[in-house]
Image 1 (cartoon, rainbow, N blue to C red):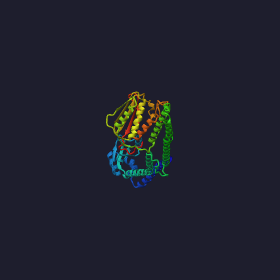
Image 2: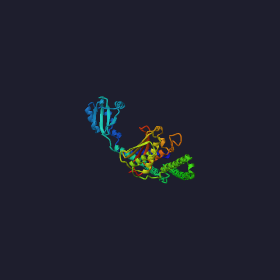
Image 3: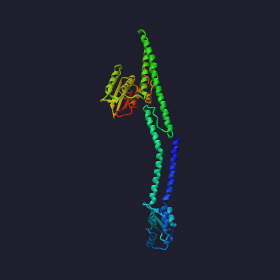
Image 4: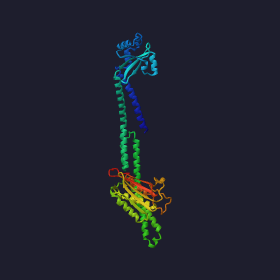
Length: 427
């Protein structure tokens, strides 16, 4: 980046210097034959003006004589009729000729007439228009050259940054083998090289994660299956004396299932099985399922037909986790609401439990985060349920938010985007 800054700085400074020097030399060469202010005043022979005005006492005679001699308009005006800075006005009274310009870039020369205490106005005199035209032409050409030089410097940089952006989009889709087409001579080659190394490390981490998932699914499930088989071989009387062992085994199996589910969602190579799903039926089915084994009342409030393009299995899993969480902490009632607002699906699950501390709103979606300080069997849960919910929402280009419920507990709100026109379904 230091080389990038220095090269741009030197190009601009050198370009401005060359423009100033080149424009000045070109100006001198092209304006040798043009009429300047000094040439006009020399042609008027203003040095003889003080001597000439001493020979006349009449304003009309002086004006006429000077107009004929200088071949321009001459007027005699009062001193209060001209607006000059105090320094120029003092120089005027000392006998100096003061040049000024009109809005049309015409030259007017003022000279003081001591005998009458008045001012002689000579002009307006038209200078050669080539000066102004050449001035603007050279200035425009100079800045055009500078713009072309900067464009020539910026173009390779823009091209390489565009290649880097294309590579970052490929990495976001899980295509870590993609390599940005940036030459080694490029100013951003170190950045592109860092991107490639980062992509290689991410790819390695994902491979290691897959290996970990395989280890969990085989190395843990196999001994669990053996233990369960051994327990089943024991007499029934013995099994009744080992309820805690069976519960621990069931808890371990559920933990493994949660780990595998979260790992599958973390794997960005997974795609969504999109289809139009009847969410009215899906939500009511989930509510009925939980109503069968809990004494807490689950109320569904859906006032419209909800047909939505989504991965039905993932949305069902999402609702299952939210309802399990609500059943665990609710006192009596759980409310499920769903609606479509501005092409966005909104699902709310709220309970009348004790609620969640607002300081923990962002923490509860992180894996293995639990609000309980103890890990006992009564509290249940592994801290993965809400992390899975958040990951499912990301896959559907949405988000999950938590807030306080009007019933006193917690309210979880899912916002799912309309995927009908979406071409990129990665989180």
